[in-house]
Image 1 (spheres, one colour):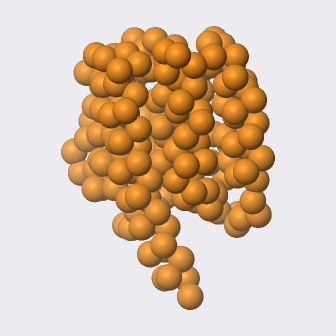
Image 2: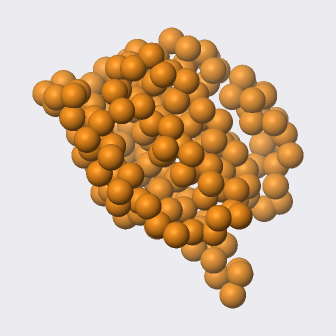
Length: 184
C-alpha cells in the first residue's frame, strides 16, 4: 500500500503519530534534543488526557524557537510543520497536517541529500520509488512503517513508531552534522 493510501486510511491516533514522527525526525534542524517531543508521544497513549496535547505542543514550540538560517529551506519546512500542528489532536485538520508533514519531511530529506533527487516527492509517496536516493528512500520507509505499525497495533504500536522515529532522527542528525562541517 502506498504512503498516500496509508494516510487516507489512518485513524486520529495514527495521523497524529505520523505527523509527530515526521516532525520528530526533523528536530535536529532546529537544534532540538532527543526528548523535546517525548511528552507529545506520551500524550498519544491510551491512558493520557488528549486535552493536554495543545499545552504540550505549545511547550515544544517554545523550546524549539531558535534562531536559524532563515534562508535555509529545510529549516523553514520544519518550522512550518511545527507551526501548523493542530492544538487538538482530534481536530479534522490532523489528516491535512500529517499529510503535509509527510511531504515536508520527504522534501527535507531530498534537500539534505547530495546529489539532490529531482523526482517529485508526490510520486514517491504514491509508490514510484525507482532511482530514489538512499536518504529519501529510508525516510519513505520510516513513514510507511509508522503508519503500518499503528494501523496494526493501535496505541500498542507507539513504542515501535517512536523507535523508528528515533532511528531516523539519529540519521538526520548525522547528515546535519556532516553538512555543517562541509560549510566550514
